[in-house]
Image 1 (cartoon, rainbow, N blue to C red):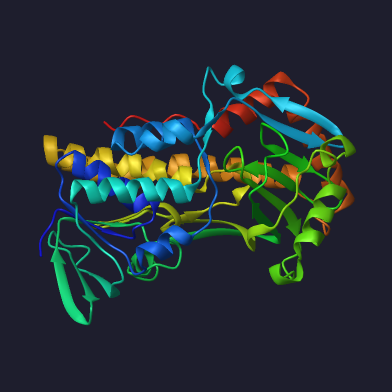
Image 2: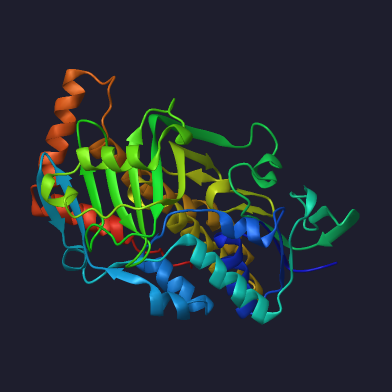
Length: 394
């Protein structure tokens, strides 16, 4: 087989890149080691920045999102019993965010690719990348027990932190940066109406809380818990009782509880590798960086990478601008590090760090007082939350 771009990974970033390239007349094949049902079973966040929303519209995978997604013009912070609204739209020049689950984004992109007739090979194994520093890279894999090979011009590694793409880069090439946080998020998904029409980020002495939503009838709640906790040790009743303890009475009284659809604990970490390119291989999304979910940046930073790689490849194939290839890592990393900074800032601002010193605790309180108590501070939060603008590729 031969194509112009091989995309490793059929998550939302691989599917989005594939759809954009297909629409631009750039041939591509997607390889995925899991089944479509498994890919759709992954429960992930669902806060889309304005730039991600526009990119999905550009890909032509927006109809259901525009019909069913919930536009949010603000968020709310809850600190020391005070409810502090952040009017995102008013503070960011008219931008907002869209609440639309990552599973639904993936489903829409799968449907768009199927309708386009673009090739995707699911349930493949033994994926290996070859000749990455040459002008003739290729990918080998097994499908239904048969060995296969695809010759291509470029490879996009969209296969996540545990995928093969980053591991295909020789030892010593990449620089790794990491921060592991001493707690996790216990998440519960339920078919219950949201507690509030906007998302609520809450700091509490018992631990951080996020009251989120997937729709007007489906809610997602998170509690900060020790890394040693196990999800199976948290019954639904225990979760709801603890959530009520961390909320003021007026909100706790509005909470509608119900049986959980899904419950899991996610550890929090920050991780970045530099550079995000090695020869003809380009790392995209979780293959190159991970953020704690506090800033709602994971999927959005992956979409940011897709935006830059897509526009660079359009320049290469439509204008002969091979010089643009060297710009990818620099462009992507500038926005990645800003997203990492905001996620780190939000995590430090709102979580309880039991081992921190008295000085650090006072500094954390001063940060909350400033950023949530001044127009400048709220504007900084709003601008980052809705998503910083993409740089032009030129």
